[in-house]
Length: 145
Image (cartoon, rainbow, N blue to C red; front, side, top):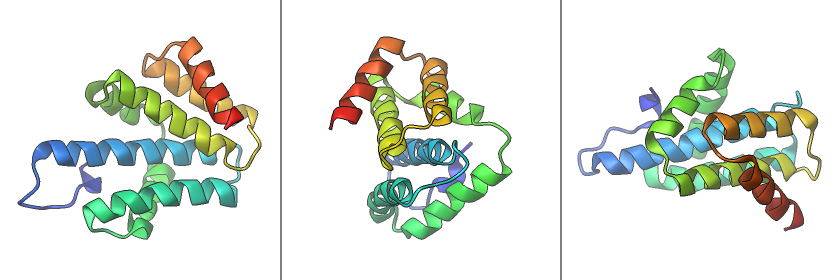
């Protein structure tokens, strides 16, 4: 599904490409959280772009190119259920928890947790089969740090 994130290389193995997809899916969902309140704050944007910068080094693509792909996908997408399907197929529990933590970090980047951001994170967590108690634990961990 998200092979547009992948860069053609002959030296990388397929598992490396899957991990890049996984990271990009996480940041695409983080972008969804950031825009859930109708406005993306500079701190939220900085959090996402910092993560994309790390990924861009691995992919030899600019973080701006990756961000543009995420923006275009979000604008052209009706739902994020394809993300959920990919997450459930490719993420283990630790990766799912790391994703939820990233989503909380993005939501709290501007020091304001909007109702729509929280709803979206809880919905994603439910769809990727993460218990509410773990979601709340991660929320508190991020909020207190």
